Length: 446
Image (cartoon, rainbow, N blue to C red; front, side):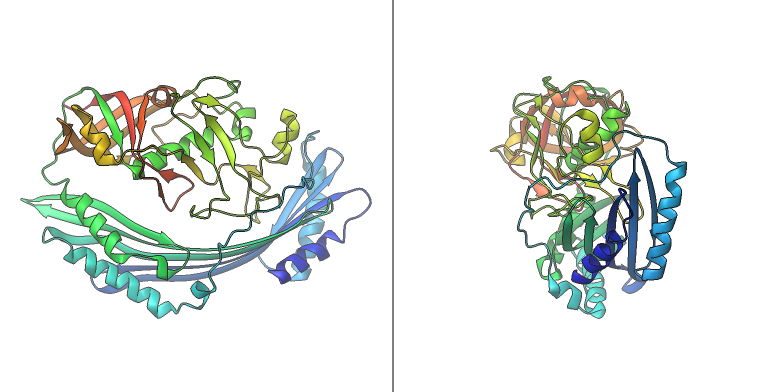
């Protein structure tokens, strides 16, 4: 990482006059292995390096990047960024972040063991995952995919305002999609395991979960239309919470693209709902000690006891709103800083999924959704998506159901959250999942 920061500092040292410079340097290494029918279907090993340069002068900013650490190319990117200033739209709030005195959290997110782990061993894991998934149940007729994936990321940020920041993280996960067949019917199921290095991964869990989720859907039929209590499985709730977190970006709010614009201080969820974005939680797959502008990430309380407490900001949206950055700048080396959540989760409750289901006389457990992003409008809050899962009858899981839609609005779903499970799970995405019980949703089936 020292080499990355040294390069960023050398470029910052080329600042002229009163211009501000921000330089971000990134080095990434990724591996992906996909197994199919006992063979390696694909193996990808990719390495990328790049430098992004942002120049701010007056009320304009120019940006350029290069996909190499070659200093001549970086110098060209600096010249191009300066040239781009003349084409930029004036914005009185643009500017490089200023140090805010918040120290980065001390987190252990890097495992040298991943960097040293041989590619052959990664291939073997993918092949073994496929074998275990196929062997998990006699009804498993095939494996749609069995994958191993990892990433090693190092970055550095330096600015003329005095920011000097570095970060490095490793992450890896296994995922399997199983095909279950019975009486000419085929269903699919998904399982995964994640960690910081391969030693954290549990192939049996990933294989067994994929097989169970596929086989329990055999014999599924369309449910009758109506209104039912719905239980969201952690995998589904994580996707839902990721969408909610996206609407709490100050950038989206200021552009009029969020249903929560002008609602700070309002009661927007049930009293038991507390939503947090905490990139300093090392359990989060996307945890990081610094944000895209080099400021320390921090725990941001977004909704507390149902009340909308804050939006997430980078330095530019914070200036526009008359507040301070929440350490929520997101970006790669090829883009200017945006704003976004990184590790969203709900404060968990006390009951397990089984205990929550036991309290429901007639409902649905949703284990999978389709078309989620296309079926959700972040401005109006309209929510409609295809789903599959299991009926709940008399407090027990019953027959599988599929090919139906659930519909409501994000606003109504947050207000109708009746219970939150204790089974918080960090997933390979920007949100953690947890079992959620939501009051009656509209079910469109037969």
